[in-house]
Image (cartoon, rainbow, N blue to C red; front, side):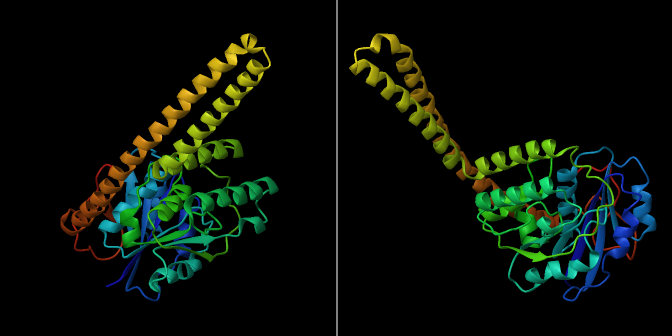
Length: 339
């Protein structure tokens, strides 16, 4: 039996969660079962109670707030343990239309992709300010270049994952999963597609960041970190090459003055050039070592993938409580929210 689980990471969403759950489809062609999983990320309001009353199938609750990326990752893990064949992630503020779930999963059902991102066409969203539209477009372009994918809306949280893709993805950042998972999909050669979706009007300001500056700072740090993780040789070779080139330019400057008979007054240029040469070659050496470590990381990720498969086959049930329907075959219990 094919199962679709729609997961909803939440933090203080008692005012919107019921509407979000009500908009989600209860049946989708291609699946025998459609269920919902609410991940309550340490909410201080009645989010968990709303999930119970509004008809969510499962609830996973953290005792403290851990952040969107950790809630997303824990949701994937729980959905896999609940037997999901496809997992859809959506936001709790009803930003995305529930009826678009059907469109989102089609490339996976057709065997065309293992990860699908909903494209909101941010450049046409009326409630986005011009600066935000520009940053969204620029950010998505950067992600496409780094990941080698064609995803036009890299920050969209409305996306679907096959079971195999969910098993292979690892979230390292604590800020947001959106950029990181697209880059990982590209570097791990996970087939990725995108489909047009319609976004609902904003119901509230974003809780992920307080300003565009904060969002840009965290996003840039995430992009550099993840790209360096998967392409360390390119990153350190490029940086080291720039330092060596700068050192060469400074040394050439010294040689010009030396040949003109003014070398004694420019010895500091020779010293600076030598320092830049040394640092540049050291940086390149670090890149070579990081590349070797990256090969070991790839082997470890393959091992982790196999361990996860075995865990799902023989392990215990997830740390969730079932809120609706008949109990599944796995052992379900409520624990204190940690994976």
